[in-house]
Structure formats: C-alpha cells, structure tokens
Image (cartoon, rainbow, N blue to C red):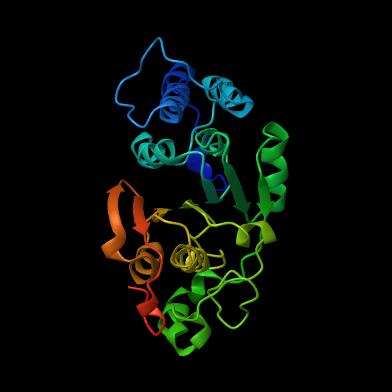
Length: 278
C-alpha cells in the first residue's frame, strides 16, 4: 500500500471532502447504528448511538482536508466498507500502509487494526501524521522474479501443504511468513486486506507469501464464521494466479475493479491430508 506515483495526484479539495469525508461520516453512522441494533436499514434520528472514537473524528478531519487520495477506487473501498461495518469491532489485518490507513482504522471502531509495511522509513513518515495507527515494519524474503518457481515447487515441501501448513517459525516453506511480529500470530483475523508489498518489478518482494499466509491464517480459524480476505491488484498475473491457487475461486464472493473479496471457512478435519488448498 506504499504510495506510488498515481496515489499522489492532487484532485479538487471539494471533491475529496465530499467523497472520502462523506465515506468516513457514513461509516460512523452505519457502524454506530450497527452497534445499537441488528437491523440497520434505516437511520433513526431519535436513537442513541455510541460516541465516535478519537480516531474516527481525526479521520473525518483528515480526509476532508487532504490532497492525496487512496489507492483504491470508491467502488473498491465500498466492498470492504460493507463488510467492516457489518462485523466491527473485529480483528483487521492490513498488509500495506498509506494515506488511506487512517480511513481503514476508523472503519473498525473499538476493534484491533494492524498495518504491516515493508519500508521502515515509510512507517515513520505515515506515523508522523497519524500516530494513533498501529503499524509495524516487516521484511519479506521473496522476490517477484521467484513467483513462478515458488508456485510450481511448493507442493514438494510437506511444510507448505495445507494439512501441515503453519506460519510462525516455519522456515521450511518459502511461502510462509514465519517472522512477522508476534502479535500477528496471537490473534485470529476476521478481515485480512492485501494491498502490499510491492509487486510490479522483478526485485520487489511480491505478494506470493502474503497470499499464501492469508490462506493459512484463514484455514486455521477456530472461531465461528469465515475469514474475509480482500486482495487488490488482481489484474496482475501473479496476484491472480496465487489467489486462484490458495484463496480459491470457490470462495470468491465478489469482485469490483481490481479488488477480489473471498470468504474462507476454517479447514475441515478431512482436509488434514489434502495436497491442494482448493
């Protein structure tokens, strides 16, 4: 989610205020109403709602005055927005950090939202303006140039197979993110968004390990319900191929623009000897 050139294009301040400012305000309204009632088709002016969090108020101010825009389109944002406001507060893990991170955190009021970013200097820069964000720098061991070989050979390593797959300390599987911050492994994530690391030149880390690891996290879920996984940039060959291999087309519930939404259930006991994720 680190900024690239198209993310810094200035737009009309009024348009941004009406668009993203309105989006955040709408999130406050719907998420507050969701907390008060299980049926939130209509806003009730005389109802009592929880007070907005400081982060939500800061997000409204930020996006009403900012001159940078999120990487995702309004339609793509709405796809994740609808899920977040329906289940918040939740555990929300975001691979990537950017000018839109304050928005994502504000859409999960009173929940846990963690951002993982490949560039430590970018983390420092973003946190200067949004110190309330929970962001951690991480290192990725892969390179995009390895994508084809990793996909074609992972089945030869038993530690990569779905029945044996784990993350923390799994040095044998080259796709497993085995050295993330401990807090990542200690929670079950209700929503995982993949919008990083970079994956548009050969020496970039690519998103192969992130996609694989998101699938492992989702399959290891013990709580009821599914894990919502959002993958951005599915117009790119590697993202699409790895999504079809590990996140599975049968769990794809919706796609908008360059964003796919998967609902992945926990693995069944009969999957212990499976050799494929799908």
